Length: 519
Image (cartoon, helix red, strand yellow):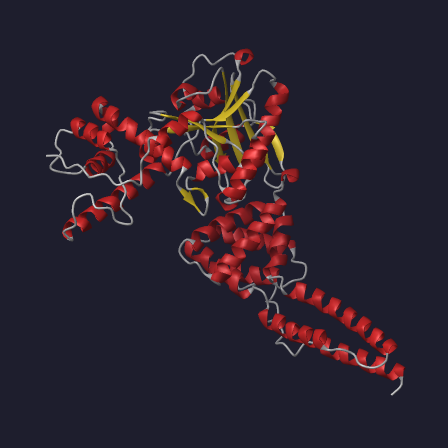
């Protein structure tokens, strides 16, 4: 066979191998006009199919899907989400077919003279490149085009945020692989579409439209705005409020942050919210971030707050050179839940040891002393009826009642152990190598350090329920932000001040003490 014939035969072989095996054709698109008598969820799935099956979805079909989806109840929305995740997933039959062809071509080695071999390798390489491009296209889920078209549609980004919020709620009950894949893909797309370059920073003032101010009141998630006077104070002298906006969602911030301009770092939210008269701005040396609120549950896990915080710090440094301290006064939302769970587990272990006849104070693998001996005595002395209970049982009863805040005696007895345990919770308790508390993790990964914890800093019902009234100051040392963020992300190391270290040094948690029983 001549060299020309060999090359021609190889090319024919490669082209033949690139042809996929017969694959069932996708179902034909539905009729343009659905049956108006069909159930609402069927109509929405009709418009979903019309949009997801088209190479270029029609704007009218996308609008019909959006309007229909918003009108559905929870059950209907979840049916549509399951259909989107499963029916329009990656076409795996085609992927398998292309992979078989790819491996077949990749393993074929042309034989013959040097010239023939060179021509064969060049032809094989061209075929492989084409097949790799085909594989990339095949690995793209079929809902990808629908999501991208919806994002480009007026009002589409808001709809996608609503859709992902519903998806996250569904994942909390059904952790199905197809739903997880849809969430991951949509989250990655939202991160791209909501890059800082696409967002606008705006200072929100009392002069903004009433519709925007109403949203600030509605979305404030940390310290509820009680009335218009409270709102006006937060937007007035000595205060700042900044929001990130996206042009596709006009008049509604994606996230906003509230700032108090003070002489020094505040130790309680009461002095921030009830500061009257406020500190003259010319005398302010501290910018205290006391509330960050996200307005879109569907953007959970997308760290817009990191970029907002850095932009605001840069703006304040430029506009107010006298401000040298940048800190937060932050809630500790998981502390009390963690502590009550820890107390319950230790009480259960203690009861199990007693039933098994173990000697009091014997250390088991999971046994630890939550309270120090003198702390147990203080709690006993402040409790009217001990009923033969251990200190941790008394502490559990006191915390569950939430009435201890009304007793100066109980409050004084609890201050030392709660502050010490809170320091441990913030600086030592971790999940996957990072701070267990979500707010702590947010600020630490942004380059902050734990500066100070404050007793009775939030005396609201929510503050007592979440953290026993304790709040924390995170400090952003501008010269150390990058260093602290890098060390935390790479090793989980948490930087803290000497004042916090004092609590940690006296915290002998993990050592076994003999529990004290009180009559």
